[in-house]
Amino acid sequence: MRVVTTAPTRPELDVQPTPLALLLLGREADPRSERGVECPGDLPSPSDPDLVERARAAKEKLGSKVFVLGHHYQRDEVIQFADVTGDSFKLARDAAARPEAEYIVFCGVHFMAESADILTSDDQKVVLPDLAAGCSMADMATAEQVAECWDVLTEAGVAEQVVPVSYMNSSADIKAFTGKHGGTICTSSNAKRALDWAFEQGEPRHNKVLFLPDQHLGRNTAVRDMGMSLDDCVVYNPHKPNGGLTVEQLRAAKMILWRGHCSVHGRFSLDSVNDVRERIPGVNVLVHPECKHEVVAAADYVGSTEYIIKTLEAAPAGSKWAIGTELNLVRRLANRFADEGKEIVFLDKTVCFCSTMNRIDLPHLVWALESLAEGNLVNRIQVDKETESFAKLALERMLALP
Image (tube, rainbow, N blue to C red; front, top):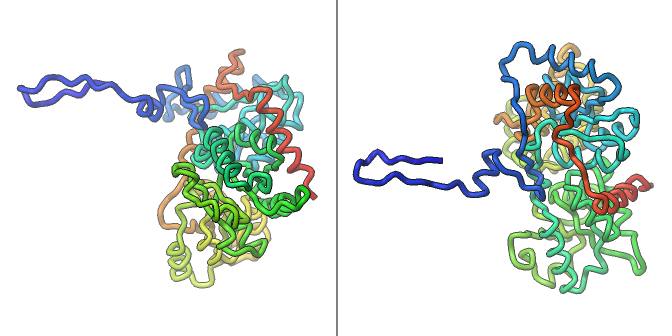
């Protein structure tokens, strides 16, 4: 990168971009981060009028060899080519149920593709159309940080009392850590069941959970669904010595929450709820449990993406809803139920897409499908065997939950 001063007396400056700058610009890769960035090959222009037909042709050529998964938060131009839609875990299980599909094209984000690779056979190859489609929440907990946290818990004399419970929205490394340390994975639908299981483990009875990486889902489940108090929860900050906590705080806590959050759901505020109630009398506020505790406490309904969809399906005609989740899904639901007279609006006035999820656009999907149709395997997501083994152990514990 060249920066030239306009002053004639000052010399030309040769500024070298830092590794972080290159990463953000999409010119380097960090293999230990959710933020993959390398996407080799030329992409067709987004304005190319033939993109839809090209995607159809490539998918048709691949036939049963390809299975396209579309997460609920994907844009409509991508969702139209999905063989199935759903949340991250449902899609990973759908992929595993299609062993005849050689290629699994996951239109989602990096940790979702990792989960699909963990659950599918060795003969199946998982492809992420854009390696830069990561997850800010998953990035908030690295393997090194979590290992250091465990050392802090050990030094505080509480590690033997702690069972890790990790949200599905985490990297394969974090899932493997969870499996290795006797913990389980959870989704936003079964978080309470996972926590109930964790608190019942061991002899004597375990009485602490390390919840990774979303503090809000952990707090909301513990307080709203399990009757704990906010004082039972502490937040471990990986950027502070000892997580910013004292030994006494760690020993007294029931829930040790990792300082992570969803960049989309974290934007909703109590002001958003109050404002929409004022603007739309009689509105029902329905939010995802990744929202802040005060937002969840002020909402009428709280639940996972699938819960949100089913609640709106069952809602009476003429009812009014403000939804606190990703905008692509809210807009799709508003269009779907408009003919039934259901008024569905986004909870916040500020437009808020998931920026990394939206990196999976039609040009990237076309490029991936055409490459596969030509026999070129691109953007494969592959978890190493040791990590896969421990991560699968944690996932299997979740599948065995009562």
